Image 1 (tube, rainbow, N blue to C red):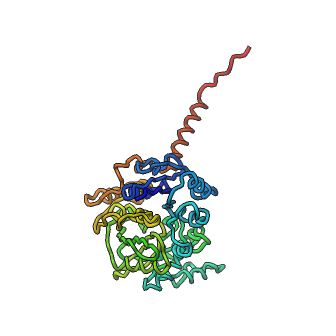
Image 2 (cartoon, one colour):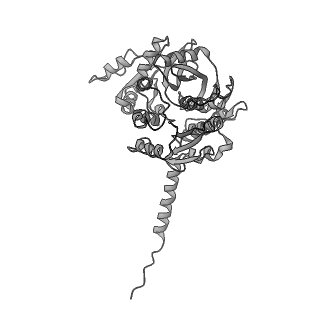
Length: 407
């Protein structure tokens, strides 16, 4: 088997560490890690063979920087991890058409997946129920000069989110429990949402868990599927998971596969569901990238990243790659403790410790690669270095100034 070279983006993300390890173990890949600084986590990983620097995804020269790296290193595949990098590369895929493989879905499929309203419509075609929608009637009231306290057609609580995918989606969603909070919350989310479009939906308050189905489709055929239950997350109303368990649900996986076939999907995605109190599942959205809890799939033998690269390059490997396990639990201690530390006024330390310290739960941290996993975010390191430089400057200013002697 030829050894692939992978340009792996989003080096500041923990997800990139799981992917780098997977590609190294399964494919003996040469991993070129791309981060915004030399302190980015992936660039400090033992699974990163070459280190490269690029500006943040919102920088106007981000794509030009990736072009330069592709020209310099000649990788076989460029693999975006987060939503921002995936969107930027997707928007510029013609730039890379003749220089590097991009394992991305078609543009129409991608645009359908990031449009949550379009996703619900496609879901209905394959028999997937979505939350009760109030968005249309709310839009009518929102355009009026004098709004009612809240639209009378609503049944509280309701859930709000942008219609289009955004990078920090958990900061732009809200559960509204009281009519008096409705318009302030709506206007806040509309201010951050692309095109100002907000979905107002029934709040699904069944089990409290979120159910995810990871699917890898190749030429519209599903080759790998995995499902999990997200038992605890940050923020607590359905953010990034801090305690997950493998929960193979074949019926839900089949429905997720039907949805992705309906939109002609090519590559990997996570289809997310909530469960009502009556036990029925409700389609929430498609996550068109590596999801935040991807480590849970990888450590339990569902090697989506390796499968994606192997299929893209037509490598001679045996499928499935890895040994899928049907049981297991994973905790994300760094994510859980960071949330507790930044929300101490509302959180309980014992609950956070119980989440991560249970003997049946594996940790997401790869202790053999601790140097990378325990690296703080680049933004924190930049702030610390800035504080040190400022302290040095202040000390210098406080020193007595000695003038040169004069006649």
